[in-house]
Image 1 (cartoon, helix red, strand yellow):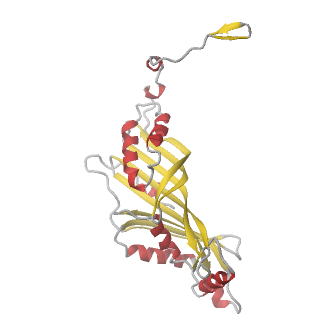
Image 2 (cartoon, one colour):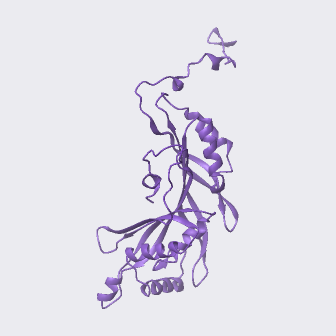
Image 3 (tube, helix red, strand yellow):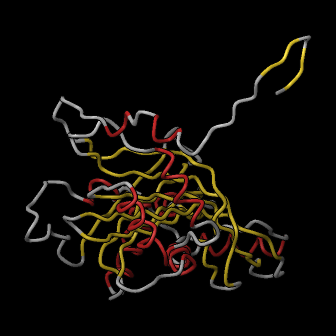
Length: 302
């Protein structure tokens, strides 16, 4: 009992039996007879640990989306359980345990399918080509996983990589120089064996007119300018060259790559996109039947 303002006040504490008396609306029957494909929580800001090829692990902060399907019989899902699952895997949220987290979501929420999307900045120390000045480069990364009765486990890794390109047409027709621009390449892949984010980033940077750096001294600026002008590329060239390399990589089973140039002499961007299945698309399991839901259309666009 608390004394205050001249009168006594009672402080009531919740007992363990209260949970049994509270109505669970989410589990109540819904009579509209409509399944929901995805229900859950979006844009959770959460610290995660990512596997780092050089340093072992890297700590970063992600934006996380978590969904499950909801059968037509139920009115709602239990949103708090998504956060509880994240807390249980705190410090161990990375590409190698996606399957474990998805299994937990599916079982805990009594769902037939589970989906997990993690978007985060990834940093790599990169030295300039001549002076070896070191600086951190930021790359946007995304991991998208799903688990369903129809398709089993699925995992897509995606990177967004800044590049420099020089216009081949401008170089060909101009008496002096050529116009160049910074662009963004987004590459998403499915794969058989573990793939490092650094490997995907290298695939993109190796096909640019030139890399982008965070720190450049004057000798470096001369080098990257001349290198880019000796290697002019359209956005079409960039996506085709990346695709050619991925076609030769037996570990990659599917890829989607797009390139967007923020043009320096136009009031628009130049854009190109390629998507390919190198193996047959995943099919529904024989005992489940085809739902008509394509994982490519749902997650393929970078």
